[in-house]
Amino acid sequence: MIVPLEHILTLALVLFLMGAVCALARRNLVMILLGLEVMLNAAGIAFVGASLRWMEMDGQAFVLFIMGVAAAEIAVGLALLVYCWRRTGALDVNAYNRLKG
Amino acid sequence: MTIYGALFYLLAAIILAATGLALTRRKLMHAVIFLVNAFFATAMLFYLLGAPLLAAFEVIVYAGAIMVLFLFIIMLMGVKDQQGISLRRTLGHWLPPLLLGAATLTAGAIMLAAPPGASESLALAKATPAELGRFVFDRYWLGVEAVSFLLFAGLAGAYFLGKERPEDAARPKDAANAGGGA
Image 1 (cartoon, one colour):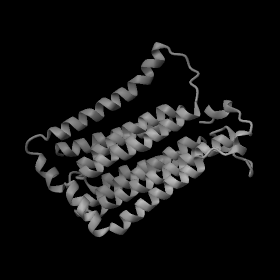
Image 2 (tube, one colour):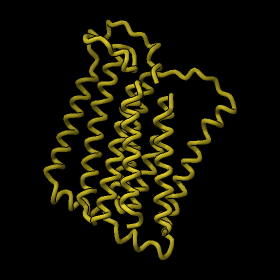
Image 3 (spheres, helix red, strand yellow):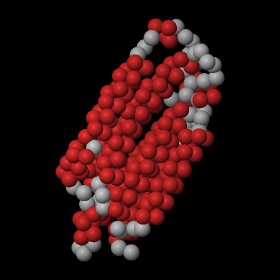
Image 4 (cartoon, one colour):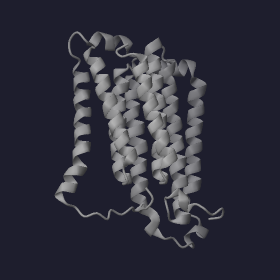
């Protein structure tokens, strides 16, 4: 172990909180999706750190799955973004205030 | 503290700075570029923590595929840049990414150069790509199948949502809003 696990987890926690604040506070749809990416990345760092701490490869295997989920999520998320932009002409989530287009 | 410990804190600082800068930018393009830098630094962190395969995937999938997809979408939206170019503004724009990129490259170079006496601990903790691949397909093959199914579902969903429909084309768009709303 090159550094204590607590420090790796602290890094992951701070990153996760930054992503969460971005996803909750920003109103641009692209920034919300970027915040989600940062959160998933922070979870990956925590998994890799734990994998090193206990010398098990399960954590690294989970990061592979996280990457798969992130790729699928972003494909659908960006498609939805384009769809919303086509219908309303805005990326601001405050502009989506009508139930039907 | 060994040199690898110092590298961990350097990379952690780069990741936090780049992510913090990315998430507070008003311009989407700058945010994505900063985040690419953060993901490169994360890839080096993964390598440092004994996961070279994940380091490669972090660059390929996150920094490569996902962020480039974001760039495509932002360009597709045609978000305009209203500000004129002046030297001070240009320097101010270039300095943070240059510093972060240089720090990331330096950390990577130090780590790959493997200073004598410090490389044993890194080699001990490393899970080689072949080992990890065998492990994943041995123990989690069902999960691999599930992820491939999920990716296919994502592909189909993205195609379905992205299809141009005739009723959308008739709608009035005001493209002036597209860049607004940070």
